Length: 570
Image 1 (spheres, rainbow, N blue to C red):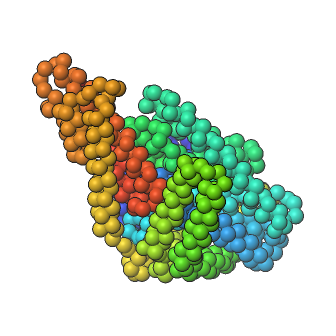
Image 2 (tube, rainbow, N blue to C red):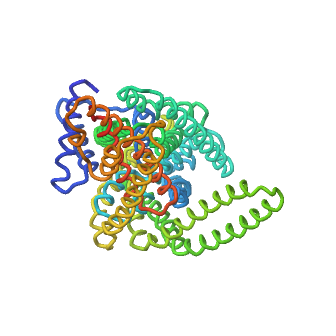
């Protein structure tokens, strides 16, 4: 692509993204249409995009950014559903599409058919942005988010097995997939933890945030070199950072990182859909040189789409049916765990005669049981219903990853232009047909939910929790002093009051020396309160008793308060 075309693409990306909401069209659909129009514009040459640019250049940071913003509590609770859709559904869809394609197109064997099945099986995360705006249940959003994070990796492992040239066996494919996922999880976890340790020691905020842009690639490329899924490694690194960054990074860094990553994600996500449209002309010209006809594209694409719909419908229905019994099954498992650990604790006290050790073990068990009870309440209160299943089914859109992966099918594959163009046509069809009607379907099914009362209730409860922490911390400092030195009650009262609404520094007086001393002490007391409040919030989040959005809002308020305290000048 020429520099001039790059500038035009950037202008189109920004303009279309700004105009799409005003005309009621999802931005990805408008960007694909804009890319198609641009590809046929006078003076624009055929655009060929190296698939590695998308798979190794754009996807790792995109998935990492999504994982960093994924609440780890929600991801843990929905891990079974996410695995069901991102692994099992992709594998079954790829295998069945392989059988269908090999039967419909003479000369295309099962391996090549499965390669096409692998690239059209993973859904695109664009559906998440649509359902978020539609106001569906948070569980639906979490499942779609998690599915979008992991299913690309499953598809690419299957694609790698299909084009490897050896004999395909169920055991071999399953072994490759399991090995790829295990190694990727290990690499991603190590990279996520190590980079956090390094970043926690970088004092310069700008350098700290800049370092975060390298993290997804530090996870991706070593995993790929080890023959594992680099995308899963990037996702796991993001989840590790999501879980630990509140502990390791200052508030200013987290806020700056969030803003910068949001901008990067916007540009990269828009770019992949624009590039998808830009390649239309080249794909059509390649296909015209093949012996197949447009009828073949429609036949193969239509049959594959029916297979994808059928498999997704069956598995989503099973998922919703299981959700109706998960509370009862979870209750039974929790009671079994309670009895098991009660017996172990009693035997531990009898054998060791160590009440302190037994109490520590009992505390850990109580924490675990409390978490399980919170999960059970969540599953009961937020149960997936048939209407949610309808949204999950129709939200199975395909996107730019499908096209990028299709272009990695080896050049010598029989009827490769047909396979690549079919993948593109199917991706566009789902974006237009399903993406264009998803909001309407949410309304039609009555799947919108109003969470304002729940978040208001939980927000009030969390505010009371933080107020109690503020009182406790200031009381402790009043009794024990700060570094062994007593602090004025004027300072303590101001710090305690400012832990709720934001206050300024007029209270500190006009005398320069006293003002500087008071504000310095005030900053330290406020920081102590915020640290304790944040720890209490993290404990509350880990217990699973509170709505994730309410906890996240309180954490953002604490971060804003910490940044205000940091900016106070004596």
